[in-house]
Image (cartoon, rainbow, N blue to C red; front, side, top):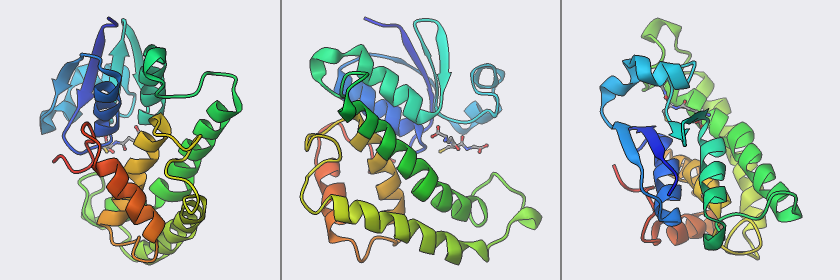
Length: 203
Ligand SMILES: N[C@@H](CCC(=O)N[C@@H](CS)C(=O)NCC(=O)O)C(=O)O
């Protein structure tokens, strides 16, 4: 069994890693799981910005939820949670993770930190950006909406680590009311939420 420590907190992006670990059937030590984790020196040693998630896998530090989810899936090839490195399906995993992060999540994150989050002090927030962010998120969501027209999941039409990663981004848009014109994405989110280990609605 690999030795896994996860710095986490409830519904933050660490829940992607928790979901992946549950699907992988791997045990792990949870570190933090309270708001003080953000100010802990231990987290800063792993993540230079003191963000969540961060992990230590067999003594080696790793941050960025996409990197950690991918690493976890690779630990259990027998569970077929991700395509093998070097395959085209693996390229598609990176494609959809990068797309979700840069073309969708960046915008809902910007809306959040400019309105409700604790990251920026009020006098540094630009709430007017939300409208543009929402437009750009919706533009990229429409791409996924089209892709999911003929398939249930993003890679090889079967559930994988890609869906754990992208599902979080889709769920975020759902919570922000950005998916009203996307029946395929709403159905995709429901499919993910119905999985036993899904963490999307665990708060
Ligand atoms: N791209 C990073 C984003 C990490 C991130 O921004 N995490 C949030 C929690 S969901 C955080 O730690 N925020 C605190 C801060 O920005 O200081 C990832 O996917 O891991």
